[in-house]
Image 1 (spheres, rainbow, N blue to C red):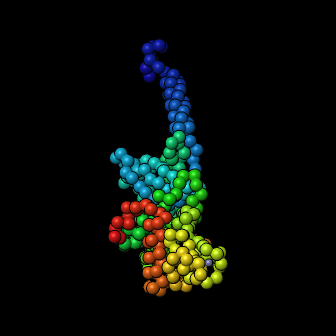
Image 2: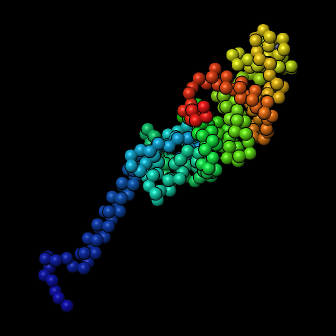
Length: 283
Ligand SMILES: [Zn+2]
């Protein structure tokens, strides 16, 4: 055993004390940093919604917009979402539906976790269905706002994606249902339950895009409304009034679908007046 001169070197007890104090100091420094970061990031919130758009930012991140049940359309930052091992790699993409854990910062949200319920991967296998899906997302992006109650629109979006992904419905029908119901949710839907002229609820046989609704036989002539099939009128009433969960439960004959599609094309031109980029694929 060797003896050291006191004061020139630390003894065992002294070393332990230094290590212990350094450890305590490090711990409190880490705690302070975490606390500061949490203060910067604000409160954690959990929202349910569908990703509408995803844009690459920097080398590894994404900025996404989500249509949420709780806060309308929000914009969020997905840090590291483009790194191969990131938990957000698959979640921070259009069509993803699920629960997102976010931190609310001063000017935007940051996603920390995602629990995905549906990726709608079937759409990726069918280009036409995917293009239609992108059109619905673009429509919702254009129509919905932050801190607005967009629950009906989110439900419509979800059910329409399910209908597209199932492959069971004519895509023109899914589009007609989505457009008419979306316009109605936005408050610009046509009046289809009574005559725009006299208010009568029976014998509604004509429709005017310009006036935005149905007409009875007598008033229809004056308004130069177009005569439409009974089934077309009934389809419009059904699409506007049925709970969203039960919307995709019917089909239409080719003749009725053609008339409905024709009316909607005119109606969209007249009332929506917005050029959707994703629609160029269809033209
Ligand atoms: Zn009338």
